[in-house]
Image (cartoon, rainbow, N blue to C red; front, side):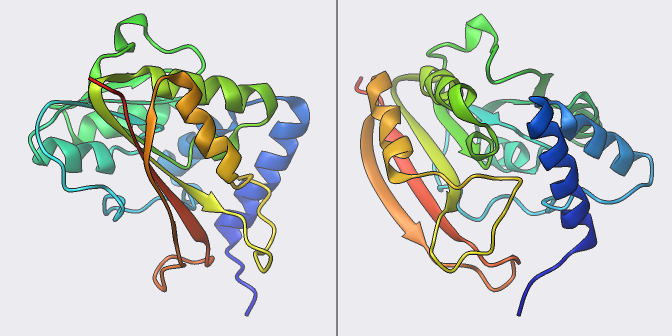
Length: 215
């Protein structure tokens, strides 16, 4: 059965127009309208990402944090958490819900200098895959740069499959792109494919990639 969701379809139209114009800030319009009672953000879930590892302790950063649920999960595991998103509206909502977490409105392509090499755990889910061209390569370099010596990076993204329905919001990551994190001083610990989950339409295979920076 073909999956169709009106909020996802609307977000897709916005993404197509923004990508054609080279505008990465269309997410802010989406979050702003949702907070004003408009259509929901289609990928918003109240539960943390189920692929988060059961690590504990140290400093962590969440890339593209949205409403902050993954950041809250890591904080509950004992991390000192920093989290950021390109959308100021999403960040404001996250701060209101989780006031004890260090949230920032920031661009992964222009990260804060003090984040370089500062985190024991870096979590990136579904952010790199919405970027195109040189922006994608620059984001990979920036995210890898957050990892402290001995630290870990976990990347979650869509895996392209021949039977996938087209998704014009995200361009699924390739294995080559995931391996390119290792050109920035990281070792690839594992690269796995996960089949679709029944409770998360539309059905998508996922990459789960874990990296470590040598101590």
